[in-house]
Image (tube, rainbow, N blue to C red):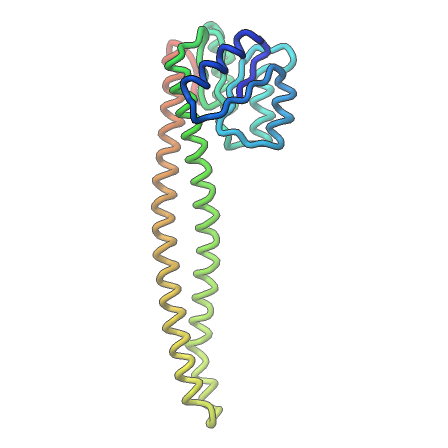
Length: 223
């Protein structure tokens, strides 16, 4: 999503991104309010918005976007002299701030990083959900194993069925323990992948903040 109420700049930036990122569809909006309506129904990989707009300024847009799509990175465009506003944007949660006039190569790279960060964020969320399901399954399997281990004591009183019940019970325990072990292994693998993704995502965010600070002459507050 690209938001700017300057028609000329909007057209130029759209062409710039479509040329530099041919595999990414760019949707331009000259109205920030219309863009917000679209955000409610569509999840974008990244949102780029100007800070200075008449209908709704970029900071207000950023806050409302994060209320609906907190994990979507928002890149802000501002004049070099607006370091105070850029600093506030970073504090509110902007992924990065780029100063005008826009450098094409730098701008394309920033969007690449933002898209990558969002996809990593989705991977993290998916891994967290998977871990939660694995944890529930492990707990349930462990419960079944413990129940099965206790059954032979009760079944011993059923003289006519004791041997068959014992054999079936032991087979069930072996199967449950194998499934439990496999689930625990998958859980460990998912946890490792989650740690890697979270670390990579954190690195991307820190690099974006450092680039913003350098772009505004280190006068911008990152925290």
